[in-house]
Image 1 (cartoon, rainbow, N blue to C red):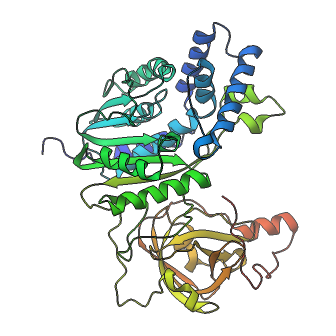
Image 2: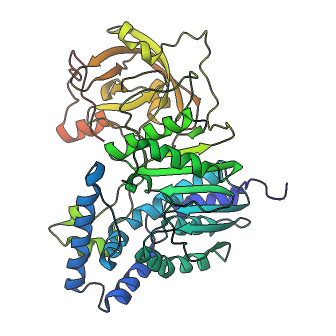
Image 3: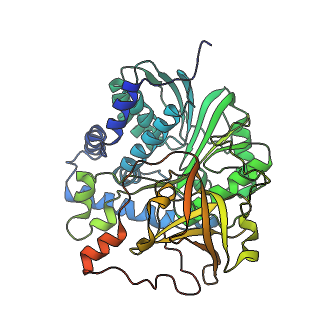
Length: 466
């Protein structure tokens, strides 16, 4: 084949892994500061400039967290874009860099890849692609960017060319087209179509119209192409994406990841709040300057958490495992029948550890339930037999033997409690390779004793917020 999928060499994987562990992008920081000074005609740390950027960040937050027709996110003023670049862009660049790198190492990306970046902003996706390709010797990318705000296009042209040069001209990306995808989708066929933090901002579209838009976008995919939807990890936007994914699945698209089709049925869990987490970024000097000593929490944005869906038209899935019909594994849709009993389950692990200081807690799913379900492991019960669950990467499939079924009325959620007799096995997926903190040891170090065994009470625990 003239354009095969790109398989990085061992040396390239090593190089890319080391590169992604660097949780900052100094070149982006320099370009952002230079652009601030170009736009304002003043020093980037001039107090008047910083105050206007602060106000822009605050206004974006207030607008962003509104819901429904009240929500209106726009980037029409110069300072609105500077606020985005100062507060949002560093994390988004590292987020997409790692996400795209994982697509490449999973064998999803062709040697010469054509990418359509919708809602390009100041270049988050283009910068991420260029950073990854700077570590790969034989791969090229052609990016077509769309952006409806002129202020973002101007910033894109100031930021992206430097990263394309750093990639050794292996990435081409011209001036973004000023198009609104709710009105017009450009012609052409693409290997990857990316909507990164875009769908939630289309407040003029209801859920039905959003599904129609996604279906129309899928018509521009190559036969083995990937449509990537990325949204923030908060409850409203993450659950919106899960609902949207289910809607387009019913219309014929395949969810490649993160959701697995373990039972071959349409998932109806609602609400489904699940998201991917990467290591925090290092805060920039600009963030510190905005926050000062007293308001760092308002302007230092280091979390990298997001909800995503990779959609395809060819039926291909990341995980092809299905639970055999004869297997003695309880369906999550039948948990009500097993209250206060111990059962065996096989589930997808749909969160990192979201427990408290005394408990490990994971959101799990087998595609059959209608109610959120969590697996809880008290820290003092942790044993080597539990490591498959504790270290499972996002979306991995794990078999768990002997969990006690309880229902939390307050949270309308099931809690499946593990104990010393519980056992776990990785069925599909990989370990994160991360060292999981020993919470019991940490508590003993802090308080000089182990936690009380009265860990969850009789009615089950409230899932920790995420």
